[in-house]
Each structure stands twice: as structure tokens, then as C-alpha cells.
Length: 491
Ligand SMILES: Cc1cc2nc3c(=O)[nH]c(=O)nc-3n(C[C@H](O)[C@H](O)[C@H](O)COP(=O)(O)OP(=O)(O)OC[C@H]3O[C@@H](n4cnc5c(N)ncnc54)[C@H](O)[C@@H]3O)c2cc1C
Image 1 (cartoon, rainbow, N blue to C red):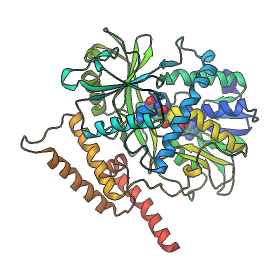
Image 2: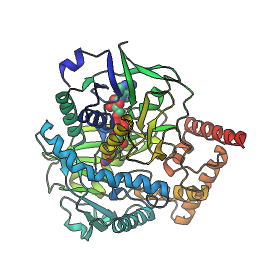
Image 3: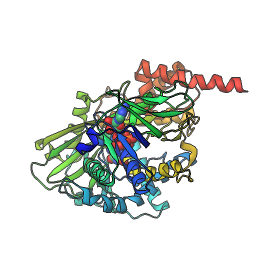
Image 4: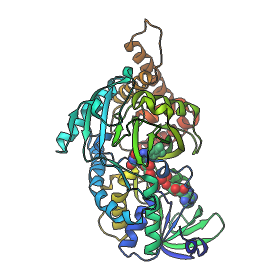
């Protein structure tokens, strides 16, 4: 960020973007490229609690596939956002490389190996199969290979991989390097970046006219785009409590960057399928002997930058067991914690809001870094009054998107819990069968639905959260029951 930008906070702008994560910065870049007048990005340079600064930034699309990805039209539309995003990245990297300040290529890995290992449960197997089916359906390249031939991959024998698939075109970028490169490019192209937070949006329920910063400075704007990740919902509410938004929850994630202490380095992303409420265990080479190990996912009541001891144990222990047993001797050089913006129905929130002049882009959950360039293109179109490039179904004031029945949701919840049970080495009495453990989770889940008293079927991660948090359960119940009564009145 330039000195000029900090010292000369403007009083007016055509567009103010609130949030300096991947979504905000890629949008600013797209607007500058299109010559859309004066653009100001507001966001603290430390980015604490933000998701982008903590991301592994896998450009994962097929590696992220689950049995749910193509099961419904809505999920397929969401999945194709990822497929289309993928095509943008070669051009994005070509454009940003000259602004890189790290001395390393921004693309940190060109390819991915997805491993199906012996820990976990049936969920891994079905998601692994769903990935191969999806690759074939979309005609993308992949090959099955011997897990022992994956460079750097050296798990413990009892968690060894049974199968492995090579995805030659899915890699990863250096998230922190890309953010810095974007900032440099924005400085060059004349966008103003302000190292502060927005305290509130200015205007009324009818129109938004600007933002007030935490130092009291006001920037008037024709359009305000809120791209503040998990902070977006509360920020939008500063202008009106009445905007009917899908609720969002912080998906706290922990990851670490370690310096390799010996042995063969990883040369590709190596990951498990998505499983057990999270994005799978993965390692992402960062260059210069550094490796990113990620990532946990825990829905929490409030946004935080702290890390749970349990998550540190989880990541350290399972990285050593499932990825590389030599990782025990690696030096952790950076601890990363960020909050993914998770919506109640799991879909992003992209679109205009009722007060005119206010646009919202968030809710990207676990692949927002990957999707950011495509979303930027779409939002820039919409700001220019042109047709968007993605489906309008992701409007922030939509009804929650339905993708499952309650029975399906209960089955999914049981599968995720079983996967987590076995991965974490939880133990039951020796005579207890897997079917009995499954029955225990099923009973708990049925009870959770009884207590919630809702007829909307939740995803496994939201259900896990609602089941463990009184506050979360209350919030979900209030929102969904409010909608139920509104639709009954409408009838
Ligand atoms: C551990 C982890 C691993 C991940 N791995 C991947 C991955 O491999 N691939 C992938 O594609 N995605 C990944 N994600 C998800 C991805 O990071 C997010 O979907 C995406 O980065 C969200 O970007 P954003 O710009 O919307 O939000 P954020 O990155 O959260 O950015 C929002 C910004 O707004 C700023 N802000 C907040 N409040 C205010 C305010 N009042 N005023 C001004 N600014 C404000 C914050 O400082 C923050 O920098 C991961 C996320 C986590 C946490």
C-alpha cells in the first residue's frame, strides 16, 4: 500500500469497496481495468480474521467434488462457477506476475494429487468416486497412479493411501503473494487503498450514499460494494436492520506454514477428498522450502482470530500421519487463522441489495479465492448495468436454496460424523459396531431437528454447529421459523 493512499483518504468516489480480501481486490482490479471512474478499497492491511490471508488457495475444482456437487441443479450451477473460474487463472497469473513481491512464482503448485487413504470412512470413498465421475462428465484430464510415486508423500503405514488420482491442471497459488501483487497493481493503476475499517454504511433503507471509517472520515460514493467476508452481514445491517439476508456464520479455519527440515519436498498439492465437515487434509508447496498444511473448519458463534488447541493437534498430528511422517521435524514459521463466510444454505451471496447503491459479494465458503476473478467480472458487469455472467439464483435476499430432504440431511450428518470419528481415532467399547455408532449420531440428529422445529434441511456443517451451540440454534430457528410464518401468512 502506498503512503499517498494512506495519507490522502478521499472524500468522494464512484465506487467504494469495503473489504480488501480476494473478492474486494479482484473486483477493484477489474473496475480499474474497465476504467470505471474512481475506485476506493477500504480494509485494514493486517486483514486479521479474514479468510483470504489464511487460504491455501488451491485452485481446486474437481478436487473439491463431493457426492453433493452435481446432485441438484443448484449445486451443479455452483460447481460450474468453479469450473469456469478455473479457466480465468492462467490469464490472471500472467497479468499479476510482474507485480509479485515474493521473488517466487505466484503459482505455487501446478497440479494436485488426491489420495484415498485408509483412515476416515465411507464418505472419503464416495467423494473420491464422485470426483472421478465428475472429471469424466466434464471431460477433464486425470490419471490413476501409484500413491508411492507422489513426490514428498510419505504417510505412516497405518494411514497409507489406497488409491491416488493425479489432476494435472489443478494447482494452487500463493494466496498472500497474490494479495500483495494485487495491491501493487492497484497502486499502479490509480485505485486508492485505505488502511482502515468501515464503521458504518451511510444512508437509509432506501439508498446508500457512502461509508464512515473508524476514524470518523466519510467517503461519499455512488456505489458501495460490501466484500468484507464474514463481517459483511453486520456491516450491511448498519444501514438497515430490515434487509432480509440469508444468515452467515464464521467457518473458523486453521492452517500453518512450515519450513521443511529434510526429505523430499512436495511438488504438487496433495490432499484427501472433502470429508468430515471440512475441506480435507492438504499440503500446498509454497516455494523456498515452505509448505502450507491445512485446514480445519469449525463453525463458531463469533468471528475470531484465535486457534483452538484441538485444531492445532488435529492438523499437526494428521499431517504427520497422513501426509508426511517427517513433518514432525518441520519448523512452523506462520500460524494462519481465518473465518470463511458460510451461508445457511451453503451458496454464495452475490447481488444488489434493496437500498439502492448497495451491492453485496460474500458467502464463498471454501473456494472464494479460486472464484474471485470470475465473481469480479460478474459484479463489474452488474455495476455497469450489463448482464451478469453467473446465475441470479445467488441473490443475497433469496429464499434459502433447497438441495436436500430432512432424511437426506440426517444421513449426511451421520456420514460426516463417522468420517470424523474414524479420522480422529475416536474409540468406542470394543463390542460396539459401526452401525451402532451411526445409530447414536442418527438419534442425536433427529433430536436436533425436533428441538429446532424447522422443516428446512440443513447441511451437515450447519447442523453440527446448531447442535453444539445454543446461540447458533436460536439464530437458525428464529430465521427459518420467521420465514415459515411469513409464507403461511402469504397463503
Ligand atoms: C484456512 C482457510 C483455507 C482456505 N483455503 C482455500 C483454498 O484453498 N481455495 C480457495 O479458493 N479458498 C479457500 N478458502 C476460502 C477463501 O479464503 C474465502 O472463500 C475467500 O478468501 C473469501 O474472500 P473475501 O474477500 O470474501 O473475504 P476475506 O478474505 O475474509 O476478506 C474480507 C476483508 O474485509 C476486511 N474487513 C472486514 N471488516 C471490514 C470493515 N468493517 N471495513 C473494511 N474492511 C473490513 C477484512 O480485514 C478482510 O481482509 C480458505 C479459507 C480459510 C479460512
